[in-house]
Amino acid sequence: MDFTEAKSHDLVPHKGFNLISGIHDPDEVDQIYNSEIRDSDVFVITYPKSGTIWMQQILRLLEAKGDIQATKDELNSVQVPWIELIGNGKAFVTAPSPRLRVAHLQYHFMPLALSQKKGKVIYVARNPKDVLVSYFHFHKVATMLETPKDFNDFFEKFMKGGVYGNCWFDHIKTWYSHKDDMNILFITYEEMIQDLQSVVERISLFLDKDLTDEQLANVVKHSTFRNMKKIPQANYELVPEDLLDHHKGSFMRKGTIGDWKNHFTVAQNERFDQVFQKEMKDFPLSFIWDINDIV
Ligand code: PPS
Image (cartoon, rainbow, N blue to C red; front, side, top):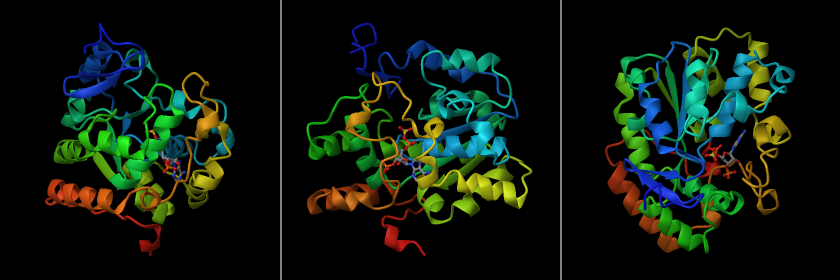
């Protein structure tokens, strides 16, 4: 299927990557590659369900030096938008600095200038078993995504890369393989759960921010799961019902490590581990799979 035949919300492959009809426009996505990049531009790159909206909140709070009131004038999705959504690539060109953006796109779509060390990239990775579970629940809430028949149905889809974001292994490995070309900071969702303060400090340093200890403490305070869940500008409860069916679940669902253990069968887990070992045997970063493994 191509975009001329697609119904709204169909998943349509474009240059080896699935886009969502009605949400993405392939021509606009292609134009991102030639965007001029300013030194102050920041891109957060994630495979879906890996901590994107968490990073939106952290970036906004860093910008506001921890002042939560200053972030409440506008939704995080407006201030730190997905560059690949329809209309956003065009708006990026003339937007005022600093241009803070998030994206789930694969490396080959992103501005070429990033690989000339212009702008900054923060890649957030999450252990893929929890990504799969979070994504399964999100498919029930998001009206733009096909509701899975059951967990097994979604498990198979994810393993085949038949989702937005495609194959988790390809996404992280491709981005990581280009790390020396870019100004990039790699962090994991699990590190953020384990020690949010030190991750926020690393991000602040990476972005050359100059916040006092008290301001940094406020960034941390207002981006914990418990606090963020109460902030409509950050928690996505204000997204219209035609995009998210809030009766079916919440964007900020559990926010923990290891929920996969409540979903995977023993057979699914063994199969996943086999694929993981094969795909990631040479990959240098490790993941935390259980909240109890946090020290
Ligand atoms: S999306 O749709 O791709 O943008 O989703 P994304 O924001 O990447 O991921 C959503 C998951 O991140 C969890 N989340 C958090 N966890 C801990 N602390 C904070 N502050 C936080 N904010 C968001 C959110 O709950 C989703 O994970 P699950 O496992 O479904 O709870």
